[in-house]
Length: 399
Image 1 (tube, helix red, strand yellow):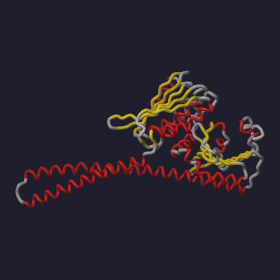
Image 2 (cartoon, rainbow, N blue to C red; image 1 turned 60 degrees about the vertical axis):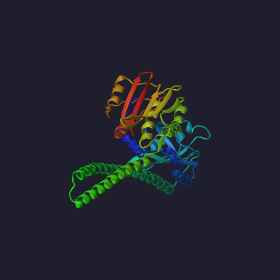
Image 3 (tube, rainbow, N blue to C red; image 1 turned 180 degrees about the vertical axis):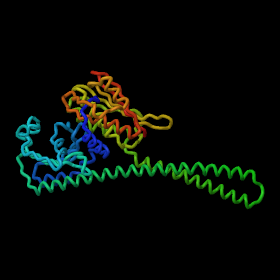
Image 4 (cartoon, rainbow, N blue to C red; image 1 turned 90 degrees about the vertical axis):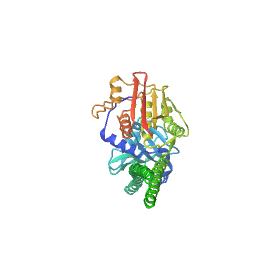
């Protein structure tokens, strides 16, 4: 892994916007399939894709048989997201940016491309809707307008997902307030019940007073039980809603998403876990954190090297932590780079570019994004590294 990469603030904000969506790319295939098929029909091209562009990779989430990823510097859509309206390239094979790419060579090489940025809230372009063809193609202004409408529908669906994510956060805040109220109620009521029990023991006068004290004691106990029920119900309901991953399912998700990246570079990739298979936890924020750590490790690991992930849950003082350990046999970091990461000091204007082992372009986004996301989850990030040997980064996230 490497800290030293070029940094573009606007691109970072775009990638962080995508991370906030917290998407499982494999779940988007069916959701956008109707729109990509419609785009293909309107354009009259062989196919169309919905591509989302992260810190290191472009993810094709619809328009193909399965989710695929490719280094973003190898894609056309990475240029399309920089446009305000759309990017049209009549002949990819004659464009100096792409003429040496494998996808334009040979009889089946691509020629025509039109990509429309998926700009959320009229700001961050998280990806592009593109139509491509092996033949020279001419689209009318009406066809392009219709494709822009489809792109707008994709954006609306993504914005709805973001709205739901933000609403969930508000619900979580309301749940915490409710829990706090239940705790606040339980203490005083418990004290009242204890006082009444003491009073009942020392009073031996009028029957009326004893009856009132007995009723008050009974009511106090009922309120205490109610507060306990509210507290337990709130916690259990909240936990049930958030149970999305086990260690086993998290492992399989990481393998399915990132093993193809490693294989395409000739890097061995493995994921293992220790602990109870039945333990369940929220998947919120885990894919952006683990995905960027893994992609960064693959990028800075040479062919025939290895990247491994270890997942485990540790208990400390009745609290649980999910631990994600990503290790590689890559380039490693200098002491200066390691200190920069360990102490969390990441000056936006002081990060310089460093390419991957196969010349992959550095965008300076991956580790910076991970640090911010881990901090937002009140977690910690630890790193150890030796130049020329490899790096191990450990994320500890409270559950």
